[in-house]
Length: 424
Image (cartoon, rainbow, N blue to C red; front, side, top):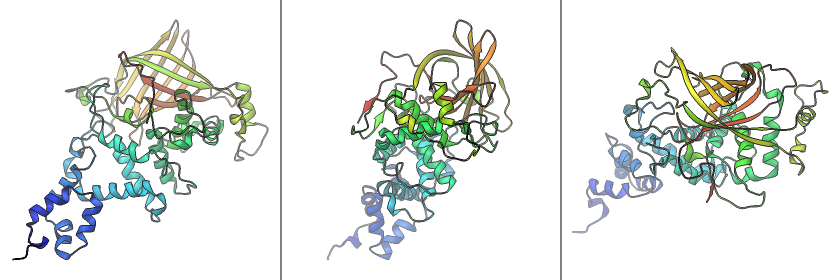
């Protein structure tokens, strides 16, 4: 009797397939109708579940949303999810193969991978999300995040900026032109108005996050944390504003739905902020022009003599009360105060935006007089070490008031320097 592959029991064939890359499984399914039926027409999802779990991803049954809500097991489509991820992997490697209208689906898949991860039990745990490690590995070339020109829909633009803000720095971000463009956006005072609450939100009074603005803020702050020259080669910078730090840190047995301080507000934080000379800010915004839509000239930000000040101050936050949020019954608004030093104080709140992002708002001043107003967005999941990215201005919101980027991150007690960077 001649033994052929057709004589091998389907159970053995499936065990072999689970060891293969999903693209090889797809090729195998095209060899004959019987194998196509085995791969794609099985009455249950056991083959695709096993194939998914063999990949370097988190088990979706152990993942949580950014608000630390479990992913419903019945919502997991093993086959469709794995196919979407593998297609996204191919597009990241070569964005030119992306079909018309496909980019938004690819970007949603990648953002979903970054957003749904298992929480870490502590800030120093080795239980780093496999999703985040995988994303860092495939995105580090910058092929997708830096692909130009980017003439997609507003949704595509927002999704790519969101992914970029979570990822960190690409090789292109180290170039002078990219740095100039980021500062050009952040210090354009037209991007701070009442309809976006003078923060990184959409200019339509919706309260939804403007990820293009967030990514520009990230770039400005990152320049002061990561020292990389324009011609220096690197693949990926691991620092507190990169993907590995987007994972939520939730101690075991902590139920956030029963926790007053579910956002992890209380404790010592570092408040970092940037600003430029006010005369340079006014000169850049060129208020003598009557055309509000005319592009500004950011070339001064590329001048070797240009200086942007970066400061870090410690602040201790304390929760003073909570308020019920009917849209999110288990995530009430948190009201807090912050003590800086002497008579300097902060007063603010944390609440969820209409698009379920964590928004921080606070004002600060001295002697009981509020002077500065800050708006920020938590990056990553609730209680992520990444912290909050945002912008600051004055509480008066006058036309010529200064603006600048802001970054808050919680200080974790450790002998290691939590502001350090690593290079791969």
